[in-house]
Amino acid sequence: MDLAIVNQHSETGKTAIALGLGRALTEVAQKVFIVDLDPNSDATATLGIKAKPALYDFLFREVPTEGLTLPGLRHVARSGV
Image (cartoon, rainbow, N blue to C red; front, top):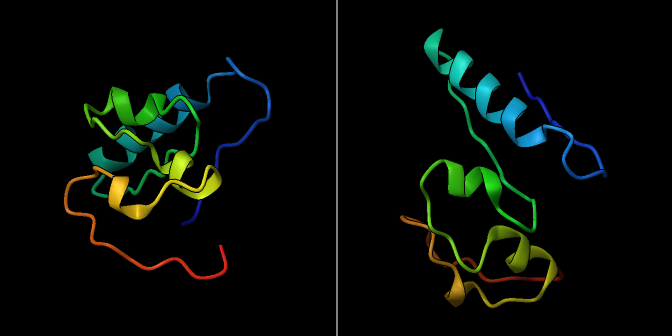
């Protein structure tokens, strides 16, 4: 199952819904992969991950991959992004 929770407006509960649904799915033995593309990285912070710069910065603000601090992430060269 693929699921996206999106809304262009802020403060609509996207993070709470994504994290709550993710937790509920893991409780019934489903694998969950959450991608936080919010510039504020609220989901990432709520999960206790300190990622600065955030994934959003890498994708949309031209931050080099060497600046990413996500645990276990390996460097992948950018091409045409």
